[in-house]
Amino acid sequence: MKVLILCGGYGTRLREHTETLPKPMVAIGGRPILWHIMKGYAHHGFSEFVLCLGYLGDKIKEYFLNYEAMNSDFTVELGKKDAIELHGATHQEDGWKVTLAETGQDAMTGARVKRASRYLGADDATFCVTYGDGVADVDLRAAYAFHRAHGGLATVTGVRPPSRFGELQLDGTRVTSFSEKPQVSEGLINGGFFFFERGFLDYVSEDASCVLEREPLERVAREGQLHVYEHTGFWQCMDTYREWQGLERRWRDGSAPWAVWKA
Image: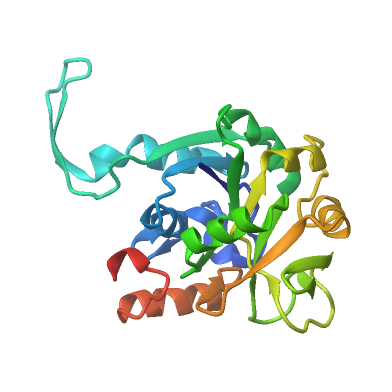
């Protein structure tokens, strides 16, 4: 099953970093937050990724093109083409398959999902989607099992931090309405970490203005096809410099709850 990660936004509220880097490449503990997100998925057995690129996507391409060399000892023989000998990787990301998909400089989230869907295989009946700027200790295997069990088109992870994210109105585990960034928020909010059946692609379009969190999710909620997997553990987005500082401090202090691969 493939994991689509939305990596194309401008990150304007984290301008201290994002004038020269896309937000998913902002480092926590010397590694991009994107790496932390991917490590979490891989820990739970999801290691095929499609990165939906936009703003400064070339920086993400460079990172993965050079990943083996930058995480290995190597010998290079100057003057000879392809004369690089790697001496064993110092990383543990064996088996990751990463597709870097250009999805448009100004495309919104729904358009990015639709455009990147060309990299879903014939056997990808279900796929994951998440944001490239938030970390959590979500049990993704349990979330996937929940998604399969309810039989709907879509699952969103619901969390309980501050407002300004999509609020979910519920009937049991079924989402009856989806309101993106309400003025006042009570209860669960949109924490990302989505699971979708392939049929959900009919709800999004390649039009650059298509916002995943608006008409597509609002429509599947109205139709009773959107369910919430409640996550009561750690979740944190990285929208602001202060939020980045908090994540960096947790990593430095050895108290990073999202680092489930280190447990």
